[in-house]
Length: 131
Image (cartoon, rainbow, N blue to C red; front, side, top):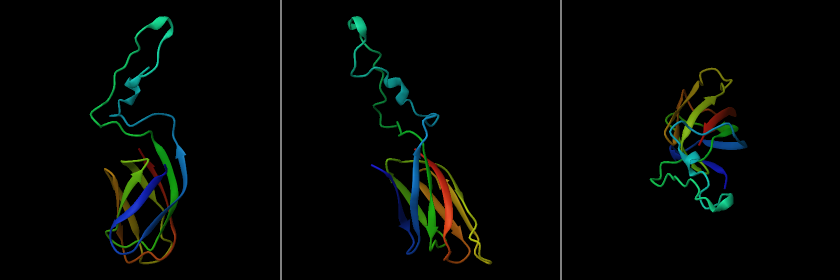
């Protein structure tokens, strides 16, 4: 399954993911899925494996880098991450390239919220790290 970005607030605005890369260098600090150890497997000599598990539902997927484009973004558009991700760790947005049309984006939990000075009718690039 791939990561999705769905507009949940506003009438316009599209975020298109062009590239999705797994980042194998780690997981978010509060993730403890690494404790899963040898769950379901077996060690040589029939030793019991270390089977600690995060069963409270707080574990998140591994980190991914998203690269994509935004079009027709409006002020206060909110996009919610889904699919293979549930948290937006950070987001970087490019400039609109048009006078009087500034754009900022803030990541919070599972959402990206835009502040736009007028509707952005140009294509703007973005990068986000999600988990």
